[in-house]
Image 1 (cartoon, one colour):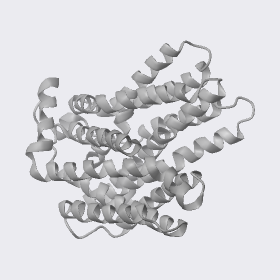
Image 2 (cartoon, rainbow, N blue to C red; image 1 turned 90 degrees about the vertical axis):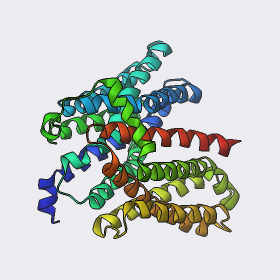
Image 3 (cartoon, rainbow, N blue to C red; image 1 turned 60 degrees about the vertical axis):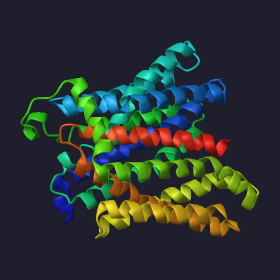
Length: 366
């Protein structure tokens, strides 16, 4: 598919919104903690706001997905979500240190409801926005937006904080706000079909829609890929938690662990870009198994690294194997999810991975 065809397909517009919103989401936790510290609070205060935001986001994911699946104008739901998230970042930038903590926690909870819409729920719209793009290529681009966000979001926030001299901390949140506003503006140029354009039957009740979560178990390919990717995410969480310890052990500096995670993100981006150029010829179900086995081997070799350079090479390989796994998992979801419950299924599986990440973090810290 040539560049012009890609633009006409809607994939470029989709990717711009995804990169901006996901970049803001990736940078938000760091921006909140840095801004709380700059306002005279403690790291635990910032962590509590981040934890509240993340917990509500994880728990509400399937319910938010069900709401989107039932909307006649799904685009409006995403516009509202972008506005809520931008407002949350702006309110924190202005209110930290000036309003009661309880009010900020409440705001974090409300914003947490909007957060899932630009992750699993946005991926659920990809094939509706760009139906002419082959799934392997479309979801490789989608995975690449996650990788770009993971690299650029925290980096932009970090640079904003470093160069912010007048109001330390506030600019970090203002940058996040600007990214969400940019996502909102870009979203105006994305055409998301009305529900009635792609569905002949009227929307089911909210409770009836939620019952379609059972497809995660009843559809065998979806169950297999969900179980495999969820278990793999336990290992990824262990890597995130243990990376500083690995850095200190190999090179005497825990900060090296952060660089290892950055290399993992770069490896994932390279893997995604390769898949965009040359989509795999094997089916997505098979690719989930192969890439997960490769990921397990990479993590094992990283864990027994004899030195720093070996660790960086293995981190690059670990990231590289993540890209085909996530792309294949999304392709299976796309193929197996009922068309009237796509956001629900995508967000249900994402919430399971969020829980797996929490479990892996606890196990690594034990």
